[in-house]
Image 1 (cartoon, helix red, strand yellow):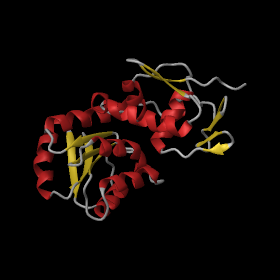
Image 2: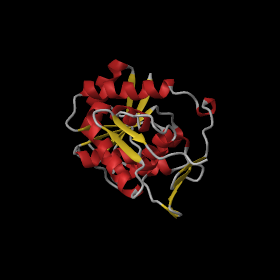
Image 3: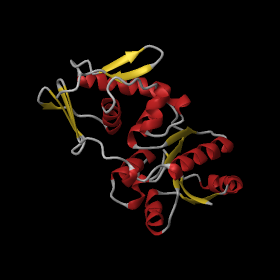
Image 4: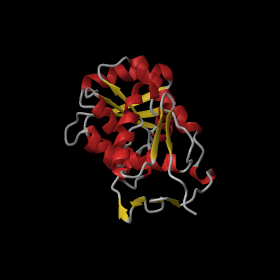
Length: 235
């Protein structure tokens, strides 16, 4: 049975939701404040976190950001954001801050259970980091250099400031120049999102990354297919 921690200030939600999720072998524990969650995360093992966007003390977006930026063992725990803030901008923000999925309120409990099962299954079967081959740390192209060890991107001798997701997108494309990635490919590789809900988020990310890389024509759009990295490699 998988253990889940819900952080939501709606105290009436936890009981019925716990009863429903128990049908799917999901054991739900709940707290109402981020300050209550931290000692629970430190003392107990949880398999995933369900995080409300509107919380006392700090909102769920800030909590997710701090969770991913920390050094604690639970920083890589799968996070599903469950919030009334369901517009596209908030979904993109949640994606950039490291959430693995995003479900706006009101929601169907069956859909929540399905999304949690998908996240947990993906985590369960992911290969351990030690088993993965070590990629090149320095990617060099005409006019562009990506230092993955330092997470630095330089063009024309100057550094380019990227968000975490913009950087991950650039590295993913640059590691396989010329390969066409569909929107679904990109979302699944970046954060394991349910791609059919977030395909427009890819267009927004690519557009912002393309502007930051100008005047380099690094990202190529293939109509009805996706995107690829177009700069030639530097010997």
